[in-house]
Length: 376
Ligand SMILES: *Cc1c(COP(=O)(O)O)cnc(C)c1O
Image 1 (cartoon, protein in one colour):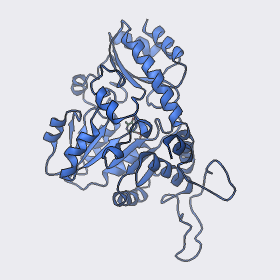
Image 2: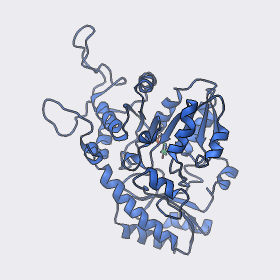
Image 3: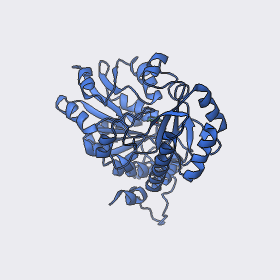
């Protein structure tokens, strides 16, 4: 099946009434058929039919052996880190989602894992960061908020011979534009809160595994930790994913228009959008993905302009998060990346003039008119 069809039918769910929409199985527990017999469902922390339907969909989209649904993207990342033992070392993109960095530095480190934060677009730097104890390379691409592109196949060529796992946070592009497992990665994680859910109304997370044995270990961890996706939220994700193709494509089209508008605006110094041929890594993304996504960061001429933009926008909302039908604008230095030390932020360009837009699916004319007015 082609992906657009999988978005709608990938859950592969049937039930006796013929309901076209997968029902919400709002049940914590399930009757046993008899002693040592089960319908396949016993208790909803372990498995729930609605959650299983969305897990099947996400596994099919990424081409994985299995996918696990969690209550948030951070819950998925937390559970993933439980696959590693104390003493393990992980090489990670340095320009990472702020919450993931906070988790690695404050929680994983306390549990005995160590991290090297590296620019994973620099393959030499990645090789240099690898030690005898390295268990995984954790990549986000494009990164948040600088849109840095990492060559996933090249990273896999470094990792594979050393038995190191490659983990890709695929929140920004989703399987509609990028399928890391097909490029050689071992595990994909998602904040389902973003493009998969797509409506800024639900928190969700997924991990997807190429290898069934690793997936089984992860499932044991998931059912034991219990940060599982609820039946209703599973249903919202199923519903969101049905329109993934049309949302991703429309948002991307709008993002191109927004990036072009910003590039030509006198109050804008720099635009970071992976779809601009001038963007570093554009060629790599063109090779490994089928789209560039709809995340656009830009630097304005002064902090005063930044403040004015955030105060003046009307079609765009000044709010955290991304990936929904509504366009959102954020100030990464004080919102998503507040926990990154200031010096490090400055070095990476996350300064007091940088804004990030998650371009939604509104009419591009209205988004641009809103920005134009706000920048004046
Ligand atoms: C939002 C986000 C997360 C965390 O997901 P939550 O659902 O907010 O817990 C992880 N990675 C990326 C790239 C994100 O944008």
